[in-house]
Image (cartoon, rainbow, N blue to C red; front, side, top):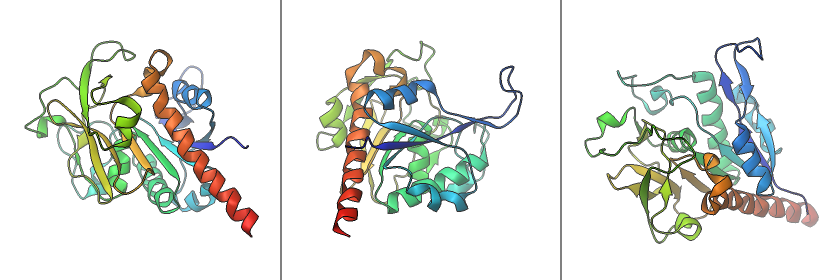
Length: 252
């Protein structure tokens, strides 16, 4: 059986480095690539591109993983940038927002990590807190100073969620974000929150197509089976997409 192909939209190195002497080089974090490989998927890195190219990309993958990075430009949810907004890179936003929308319409398996959760929510009609200082309930330290591979706070998972089946009711997670979901998008639901009610995970309302988390499981998967199981779940859901395509081909 063919291993499912997992697309990973690239991040962009805005500044030139000593190794790659060019600006705006596309790259993917090695830990996320390895987590997908270990789970049985084949990563396919998608460079930032004109959103008009998205339809041509869709046939190349079964599932898609949206990763961390800069803040999502607030004009995508009809707001102007506020004082605490971090760095943004609108070419990546344009490409990923269109990727989310078309991958969702095409029935692809979707997984989001940190910024990935945020861009999924925005692309499907939700909004964000541009900074957690805007959320009067936010009390916990969501930008940890501990090493990134270590957990720093617990979350509370809805018992009727896919995430609960994977990780249980109260996982211990790492945290590296200052934006968060404000209004959840139509067709999505919140399935985990921190103790201060900050949104930590979202999923599809009526199926298993979308799962996204606010923390960074790619930093913890090597020593934490629950974190690895998030990537296994993406590969499993993507495999069903691949099998459905094969069934359609045989039927035709």
